[in-house]
Image (tube, rainbow, N blue to C red; front, side):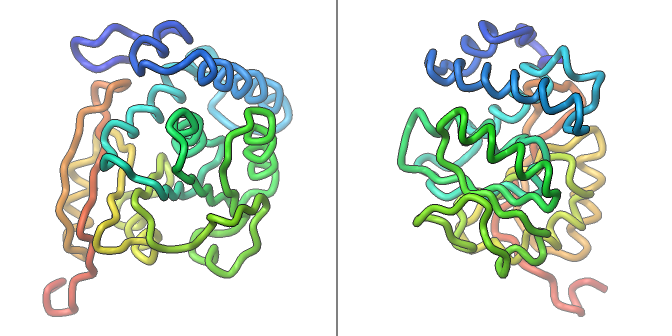
Length: 232
């Protein structure tokens, strides 16, 4: 469902109009969609009920993060990438601009293989770490490029990975003072923020989702663990 006042996204034409992307980007997303439908037959990549709404539920939901990122953000990290949402979609959009790098962390071997195949067939430069998030700094890359690094990220993203308090536990090691977290959340976003603030200090903004009237994008900056006295 689109945000209030926005026309719904039903397919590639609506997506292209909403996000002002090139024909090459649409072609890459079409290749992504074809691979997703093919691999879905043997691997549970997405909920079967969302197969017919890929462009809105998955592609547009992911793409909306690009406009919320700091201008000129170069290094992106996507946690628990799964089928590539939001990280791989953002990487495809970033490919139009050049000069940016997306790293995807995914522990499931088959899903990591799927991500690598989409990246190969679309020609999108990404790094894929096949590892648990908490161990990723010590794991080898499935796809490796010279620009890859673990740290100093401009933007960290995640969708449907964990409640915000746990998500910040996982993401904190990758935050610097300049890092921005963009996390796709549902109707309980504010409650999750309230819980997270018991253990963490951070500035936060909740942005309405473009694809779900109850959804929010939680923007986190200046993340810092509270001291034991502050947490009481």
